[in-house]
Length: 99
Image 1 (tube, one colour):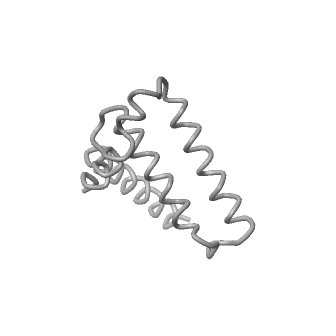
Image 2 (image 1 turned 90 degrees about the vertical axis):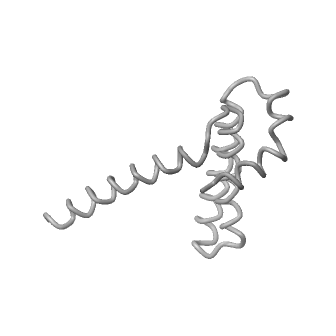
């Protein structure tokens, strides 16, 4: 599912990250920075902010680079995350129906 994207990110950055990154805090900092950029753009320009989708995709790229650094499979992780998301949405909609 995400194998091709993960491999492309790996081609670009894996060797540099393996040599230069020593803790997860590097990736956490990058993610926090990306989240901040999206938040600022949304606050200033709304959901149609210029290239906001690229800023959001940056979070995906950083996440894939982090998974590469951890040597984890993004596809398996994504499948588990989707299952978790589906359960959460089901609970959410069931709660809304009870109200």
